[in-house]
Length: 112
Image (tube, rainbow, N blue to C red):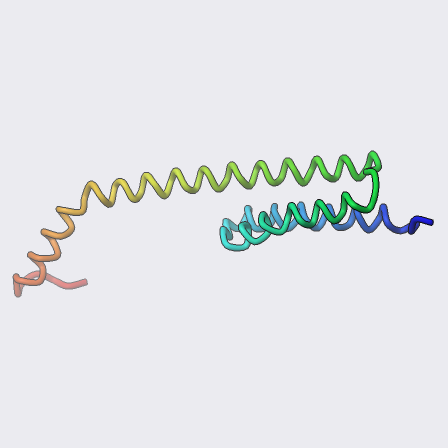
């Protein structure tokens, strides 16, 4: 006989998985978000092995998927911003090197 608390346990676990994704994404904690993403599929497989999803569990699962998608969009946006910043740094590299060399060789240049 199935455990009467199993649906509540699965709902709670789905909520926990979604909340963890959402929290890591909101903090832009990319390491933690990566950990959450790596553990997501095994956790969902384990939950699915417990039997068919109820309507409320299916809704909770859809929330997890939506939060995962939103987190992935956040990662992509952060990656684009980082790429733009790196490109800017690459474009200005020669100027920075010249300034650094000038600063090291000129005794009157203030070092801040």
